[in-house]
Length: 184
Image 1: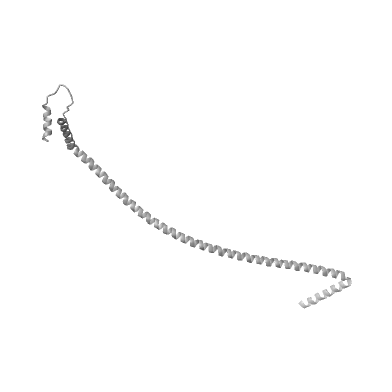
Image 2: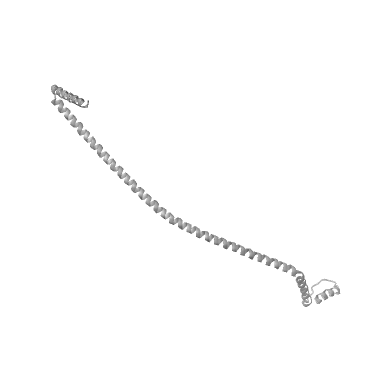
């Protein structure tokens, strides 16, 4: 430090030269200038540099702390998501199992319903067949009866004369009279 002060004092005693020029003596000028500049920079810049480094250090520490907090939050969210995924997978499995059993139940219900419907249709078919058979039998009976009646009427008309006709009517009236007396 004494050398630096001495160099400033000696500057005041140098005689001024008539012109400006470069000093080519490296050993005389540059180390002194450099030591002065470096000394001033260290003396005044030490606080600024340490403040800048401290601020930078604090920002880095804050960033690390924020990153750790975010990482912790992300880990919590990941665990929550994993538990929700596990829960959803279990529910999906339950729905799948229930869905299969529901499908089987619906399948059995549909089969039973189809059998019942087929059985009803079979009964309706049998009833329809019986009804149609009975109707056909009745039509045949009616037709046979009509033909027999027409044949009997034809036979009676050809065989009956007025006298036989009057006797038959009288006999029938007599029978009706006897029946009326019985019922009274």
